[in-house]
Image 1 (tube, rainbow, N blue to C red):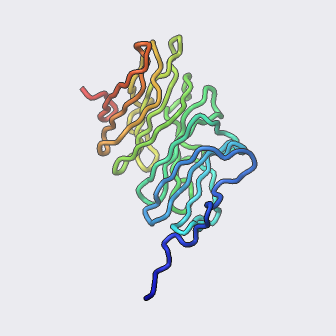
Image 2 (cartoon, rainbow, N blue to C red; image 1 turned 30 degrees about the vertical axis):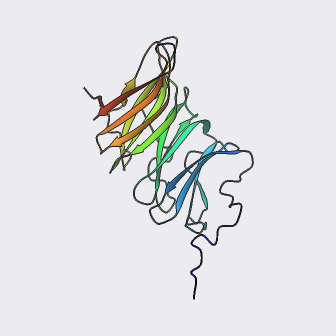
Image 3 (cartoon, rainbow, N blue to C red; image 1 turned 120 degrees about the vertical axis):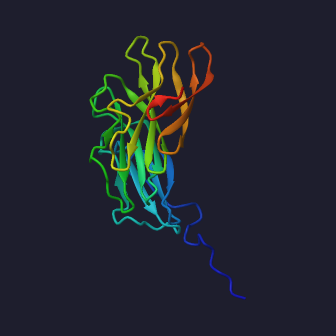
Length: 230
């Protein structure tokens, strides 16, 4: 009797290092590449950059460069990042960028070969520099679009945390206007710990912790083509 070799035979016990730069490598997202391998995404705190690495099912590097900087080196803070598959063997990644003041959320596509697909510095959520700090993006993928839901501080004191969303096509174009869509904005209480799912290419459903009552409650909303579902 001949036994087939285990599918993951090349993976050593204890795992393999994916990110091991000087300083701390923190956080991790795992995106399937559609060919049995994965793209790992993490924050290299020592380099202040979000990085990615694609490996096959046996743990071998697919990209010649090994790991690739998705965000500009020295430009990223631990203000949250997220990653999803682009559906074509690559990934779409969002992060908090600190080259602007206040900080903003940007998004980038990396293709199956490890090449950046959009602007080298990523695409901001807003078309112009925001006067409100953005952070903690969550990404969800539709059939041919990607949705980003993120925190944004309210410009009205006491500067509570609101939720906004933006939709991008796979070429990096904003589809919900220059300033995205409001998921929830209040002048009392923060909106935190959000989650979302896509419903096709035109709508998303979002849930979050809401503190407008003084206690933590769960609220939800649906957006269709950038507008709240009535």
